[in-house]
Length: 74
Image 1 (cartoon, rainbow, N blue to C red):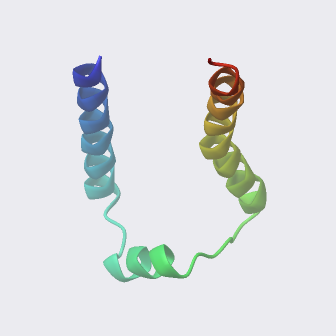
Image 2: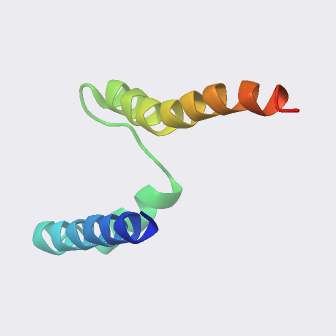
């Protein structure tokens, strides 16, 4: 199972770098966006909220399921 997850992570990283080389964004803009984020365009706030929800919610559900079982283990 760990090998499968590792392979999937490397496939995702490969796809990311392939897409970045295809799009070829300016390096200065990428570095600036990493440290000074900016929401521009219509729907950018909704996209940011959706991304935050996609990253936070799985951990919330995992902790919600796991914590009660850890409390009641004797």
